[in-house]
Each structure stands twice: as structure tokens, then as C-alpha cells.
Image (tube, rainbow, N blue to C red; front, top):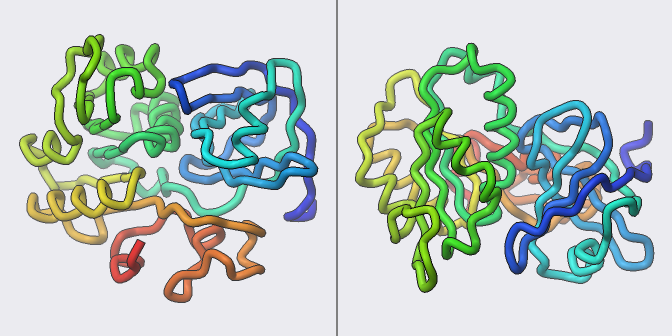
Length: 263
């Protein structure tokens, strides 16, 4: 099938996550690797790359923040509507490579959505991985994504949830402060471990600084780079940075491959 071929898929559900975040559940067996993305196309408006927030062969969850014309239009879609997709594209987190290791997931805001795909992958292959530590940060309690799943994650894994501020009731009873501050305080062993990150560049930069102070090497850190993409196949060159195409070489990179890039 052509890399550019669009296909229409049924929206099984629309789940409002926060005031500016929505998740659509699509009926499909595409099942991208955690960290891969699909291109969502709305005729007459445009396209937008959205990372997979799930891992299963029956449905594809796409979580997006309403920030432009495509996501504004997508936010109006309802259960039973159909949407055009192409993909999946890119290189995700190499889960096979991490077998037998401890995993530390660090995410902030919308960056937690692709990491949810990793959690679902681990759930299905739990015997392949050792200790799993989650560090997820959001602006406020109302901005926490996947609210109904957070409690379940805390039962299965060591979840460190934090919010930058709590102007309203803190229903999660979690620490108030940046997720990087929580990461700094916690003892984490770098032995037989990998760190998987996704979130705002400032969070990733600070988290890498902290993780390296704890003895982790560049080769133990994996990051997802966010760049505006057009063709998603490495042809147009729009997302090239330092000789690498984010859409096809990434969006997930081992840190030693991209540490010189100014994200």
C-alpha cells in the first residue's frame, strides 16, 4: 500500500480528557509500536500527526490537544463519524531491546499519551520487564490525562504523579511541584535500566540532566522529539534537523544520537 494512501476509519468513542484535550477511539487493527504516529487527515482543512496512545489490535486511541485548525475540526467529531488516517509512521520505542530491564517512564502533559501506549505494551508482556517506575507531571489536577486509569497504574507500577499547581481540590492527593523535582528526590538505580521520555523540551532537558547525575549514560535514555511534520515519510525534508528526519528516523531517538540538537 502507498505510504500516502488514506483510509477511512470508524470512530468508536470520543472521550473528553480535559478542557483542551480529547481522545478519540478508532476501530482498526493498525496497532502502532509505542511512540509511532499516524497522520490524521481532514479534507479541506489539513493533516496533523498524532502519536498512538494505545497498544492493542482492535482499537487505536489518539489523544490530542486542541491547538490548530485540524485539531479544532477533529474535536467536533462524534462517535459514529469516520476519519481519514495514513500510517503508522516513524520509529517508536524499541520495546524488544528493553526486555529484562527496569524501565523508568518520564512524561509531562500531552507527552504522557504516547507513554500510555508503552504501559499497555508492558501490561501485555509483563514477564519481559522488571521494575517499572512512572513519573508523570501535569499543570493542575484537572489537567491530568487518563484520570480513570491513574489509580490502576498506581496498583501495578510505582507511579509518581505530580501537578505544577493545585488551585482547586487535589483529587489525586499527589505532590504539588514539577515532575523533575520529584524525579530529583527519588532514588533510582541505573543498573540494567532504561529511561523513556516524552513531553515538553524544557522538561526533557531538565530530566536528562537529573538522570545523568544519577549515573545514567546517554545510551540508556530515549526521547521523543516533537517537530511539525508534513509528508511523514522523509521526502519533503520539512522536519530535518542535523541530518535526521524526525518523521522517519524518529520521532523516538536514543539520546546520544540527538543530544546536539537544539529542540
